[in-house]
Image (tube, rainbow, N blue to C red; front, side, top):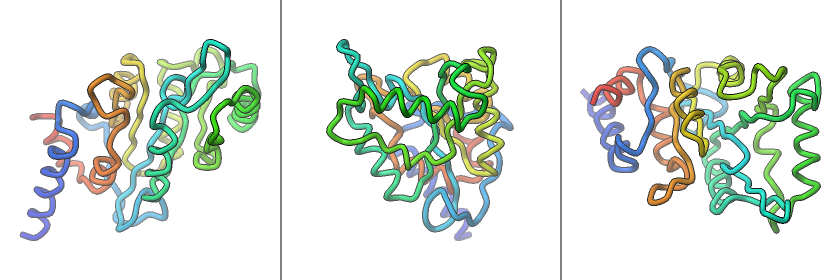
Length: 213
């Protein structure tokens, strides 16, 4: 009885914090079960990993070629960090930038840092080794390869993807990600952190209920 009440409370929380219409929800069978405990993904059990596109989602390139945080991005990353929710990047860069994700990530950091104009440094350390980039030009989004590789590296955690382009949101959703179209006018710039925390604890059965409503 208590478990049923808790599940209902979680569902009510999702409705109150975002509304079903505000969220893009995975297709049937896409989401995996969430483990009861994890060293990452939030306190009190539950597990979620939040992946982002980079350009025009977290960072913006100005007309003078300088690069800086999108409005609210630094604050949002701090909020995720405070809740111990791991983050990652799934982003297109030239495959020629390296033969491994690590090499391509290092070149991407160099390019961005070179023209970084924000007073707050970009929080590269938050992303660790969860930076996925194309090994070949055929892997460039919206091809599924990067999302599939990120999913394989994320265990059984609930997966969230946030980007500013609807084609990437649709593609990631079809692959089992809880996808959110970021930086839309009149909507929260990013998926609210309490919603992500609730998702981390949401049983698969409840995710289907969201989809069917």
